[in-house]
Figure (cartoon, rainbow, N blue to C red):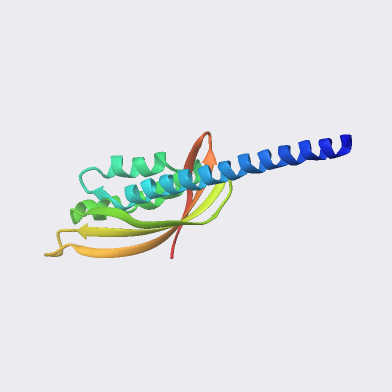
Length: 149
């Protein structure tokens, strides 16, 4: 009887631990998705009048390594975007987590983007699928990489 009681106690402890892990995974999925949607929206929105601030917002939501890559790539676009008075607005129309753990998530987002510039009479509409890798660092979900899907 004592062995049965001990096994029962361990079983309850294991179920409790499994529940905590399940809750942590669910929370990670929700928070990673929310952060991916926010950073994708920031990436899709910019104005030639506020590029420094717009790009800095993306960098603040990124890991140091991705922020450095993004800064390098975006700085090469500044003169072109200013020359053609380019603006863009975007919103995430859908998001789904493909893989996740409590420290890393791959989130597929669909971004609807409207781009305007001085060379076109009408804004162009674009739909882009992006796979964002988010990592949990220092209590936040940060963008670590992006690929076009």
